[in-house]
Length: 125
Image 1: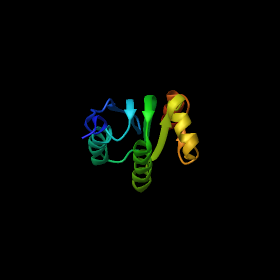
Image 2: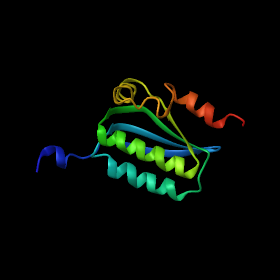
Image 3: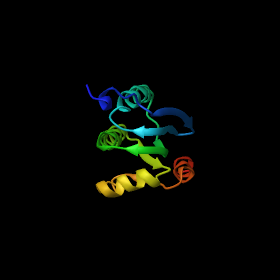
């Protein structure tokens, strides 16, 4: 077995609530090794009643591979099915490049600054 296959994830996932939004903060590498951690965390989120917004704070993501991008697409589809708007906040550096290179930049609602995504979610209707 290769060392890559046995490597532990370096992703940290935390979450919280802010009015009508669930906020999930990712820190570290969003890759194939991180998917079990992220999916376990998301499973608890999907069991909650749907909120109007789900904000992924990606400001501290240092790496993202194709499996990480696939997971973001799956999250987007799950949000659409629940009637939840997915906002990506803190999209700079690595994540901005990956979204641009893959052509997915316009598939998501992207905010360079996390606080801008949060303001969108908590603004009065």
